Image 1 (cartoon, rainbow, N blue to C red):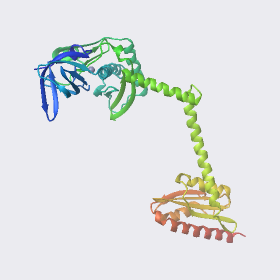
Image 2 (cartoon, helix red, strand yellow; image 1 turned 60 degrees about the horizontal axis):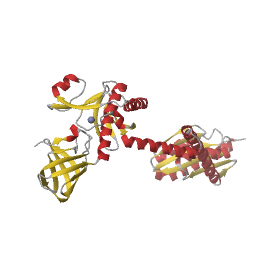
Image 3 (cartoon, rainbow, N blue to C red; image 1 turned 60 degrees about the vertical axis):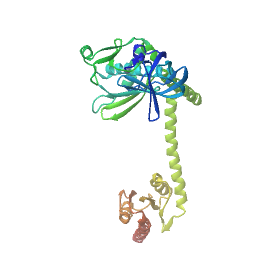
Image 4 (cartoon, rainbow, N blue to C red; image 1 turned 30 degrees about the horizontal axis):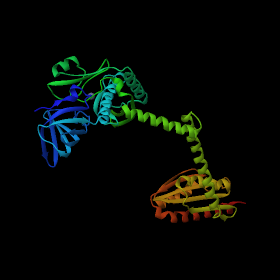
Length: 417
Ligand SMILES: [Zn+2]
């Protein structure tokens, strides 16, 4: 026997009287079928209702509701006793259901706004909802995305429709009539009768869910996230009802707290200035750290005639390596420096002070020793860097560099008159 669906006759029924048609137990799961019910079964992207069924001698907690061949199955855990044929009272958990109704109606309102903002070629690619949010997947076309500006406009129109408190009508008509009257609306499966959900002068959809009867009851709509789920398809996450209000209140409260910390109402510009200051400070720290490393390393400077040679393996952070080399030769214009650092492979950097003769070319020397670590370098006579995969050969490469540099500087000195 098909169950009479009270939620279609009046979606606002929270409490109802009914008669138990059947109690079944299968795999430890107890189900109750009533002659009529206000419990909505899961389907069409809307979750099932929960609540209780109260009998003369027991109470059944409804934790899941499914529809099978026109019968509504209430999955229950029972305290006490129930009998077939017994008159019972059903109570739907209204807090849960009303939020489903709000989010379901919100999805239709937003869909109407999407068509107006993005054009009628866009297609729904899936949707569902919970008490906290509704999800709408929107196919907008390959290579396209919904812009932030379009989202704001969709949101604005949606909330306008809420303020206008338009009627939401639901009714059944034959599939043939539905397709004739609403040729633009997609009928997803073959059925005899179609349930039409019509938001006055805004949106028409075929939908089996529960909805509020006027748009004002949705309270508010906030599109809080946009994700790309595949090429050409964007997902919008929408909060409505209490969930939207608490999201907006929470966001505003947080903003106020930040504003108090910042001691300004212009929080946005405050954040931008903090970000810029942070960037400057980080650059300054990097510069100072490089200098500190450089000063520490200067102790290892080896004198060759009037020049200084510094060739070492170091452990400073990789991003500081070239700054450290530059800082050493800035401090000591008679120095030439080659630093190596192991990082899986090896990184090399070389720099020559401004008093180092052009006769000694850093780029050439670095290129020569880079062969040992299986890598390459690039740069000029004054500054060069590079690396290679063979970190274990770094020591040998640096030893070679030391010999080459010393030889070159000695040769240069001998040639001087
Ligand atoms: Zn719906």
